[in-house]
Image 1 (cartoon, rainbow, N blue to C red):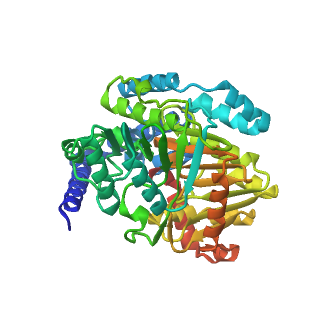
Image 2 (image 1 turned 135 degrees about the vertical axis):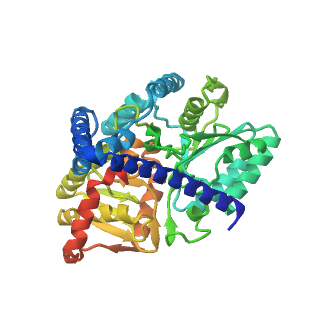
Image 3 (image 1 turned 90 degrees about the horizontal axis):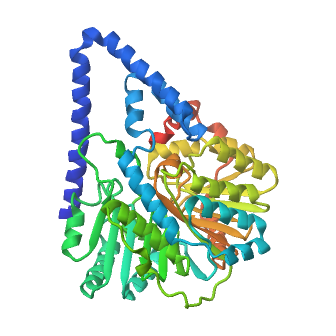
Length: 509
């Protein structure tokens, strides 16, 4: 075991031990006062009932509410307390104010060219409506002077990223959920160190929860010694914290403001199949060149300023606007935050589903959705739209995959085709619809991505890359196993019951 991995494992064990000790102390407290257990139980039950009323009256999705209400009532002693710790957007008032300030600054830095959105409306009013929604709620504009390149596997994105990093002259911004030293990140790190010595502004953000078992504590300090500016999103503390639930799940790379990447691919070797973690790893990413990269730049800078408590002049990172790109269609990057009280990622997906006329092809590692999205998919299928969903054959999380399978039978009964990617793990998060629309990003079809995480994606209309996304999807189907209704019916009742029980706890997974 190398030193870095050993330190990462030690950190995870230390944190786990800390949490176990805290639970043990709580149980000891309960045991010590067992003579007053009835009073303790009634107090806990009262708290849980009060929490249920809070959940009912908040603005979250009804399915999300139900998913929390049931476990809170089943476990009244700890249910209410657990919700207080992990039940939703738990940033403090001060942190929310910081994020509001950053959102205002982000809005002021991103201005929509009215002519572009007007021209989009002349081509397709539905596409214009979608872009207006993203503009209104994510505050991100739609662009047309942007080339898009789709990468169907991590190896392709990795090679392209290395090439573009080598060209960097002004700045490199990287923001990832998971980073782990190995072939992929070490080769990137070598370039980052070299570019930093050359005077390039090199910055990196990683999520502490995502890197819990892949990076040691205070790894950011090691990068700082190499000349790489590094910040950690939501650092983990060795005690129960309300902030643990919100994570930076975005994957963003920006080079000189001219080139940007996003998608599902993190900076670790399993994403480029350098080693087999869950069979063959199927993922996807997209590279932007042109005006739309500005939105990715602002997303990164907003997060950096939020973490660092600074007020930076974003405009100094904006490249000149005189460069023209050979590009068709419209490109609309967007981000999604748990603080805006608007499920932007889910709504973008729902709009695609509801407007589909011919087909909806979806890749997703997890299928844990609310009633609205499930109903929308079923209505589309019943209306004659060809709906196909590809999920993993080899899961990364057993319980999460059990919840995913719990949707199969009802979907197949309504003619939605379910496939499992037999070579291994499907980690791509892509939608492609009617040869006209597509989304590539970091947003999974699960409660965490749709309601709790910071996410990002790129909505596409009539770009050349949409053809590549569809072609990749059809080729992927050739490597998939089609799940049958008979197979679902033959599943034991015990398994079905287990999946439905686990489904009740979907928000916790």
